[in-house]
Image (cartoon, rainbow, N blue to C red; front, side, top):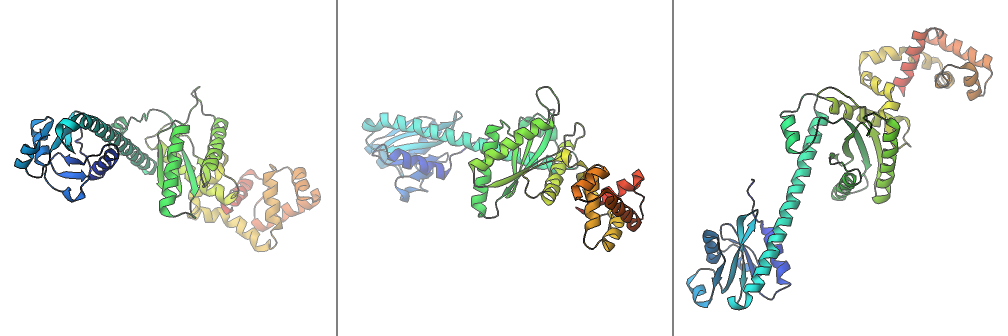
Length: 384
């Protein structure tokens, strides 16, 4: 078991809290007999021989007036060993006439041990949260297998055999200071862990929280509508419980591959970026509704994208008022139905056909051919 100790901060907290209850000076010593908390601040740092006896002999040490005169840094009183997980981590000393304060001292000792145990458990919980955060951040950013992944997940009680999908919660914290923003993020993190009963929540930055959520429902099926319903409720809850405005993005569920969680995170990240660019007023983005632009995103800085955009560039050179490009976009939005497209543009069908013929001439593509239509559609997607 990891060694435990009592900190000076906790020691002084114990002193101040208990001295409000009893009218006696209290000293708290560490496992070396050094005073690290006291009602008499001038004594901090001194070695308390009574505490040394209590530690070495593992017993309560009572010191009367004659005995106190023989020991260094000691006043009459009672010294109780402080135990945490059955291990002596320090001593608490109560100054006064032993016959009058022993019963009080027992209660003070019990109270101090309860405070230490609570502090230890909170510290363990905090460490567990930090380790899980490090684990989550490691697997969402790693293209390769994380070293000792199975061992790490076992120690953190994370079942990686379950199917997970990544969710990104983007927080608008630009108007807040760093400390306030972090405090709010931690509040959201705690709330998410409680209301979703999900412990796999990590703060990635001052503007981003990542959640790994079960991908499949109770019937062991992927259900996008079910996820959308839950995530919309989640955004509404966050909005009502804190001062942040948030956006949420759901990635793709990958059923196989050692980097499936990392890939899911990447798709959620790109879906968020593309979604904000296309519909900035929206607060929910889903990979399944942005599949093509997400998959094309990797081409944005490559020569293939330049080639795919060439027909559209030719069109733009002559389409100064953007009418032809709007016509083309509307045509695709209405699944190439001429009548519906003409109605949406409030033009005659003959006018639409004239424009489409003009688009074909300017781009050098034949719009009656499926491949040429696909090239233009992809170009429009890349240009958004």
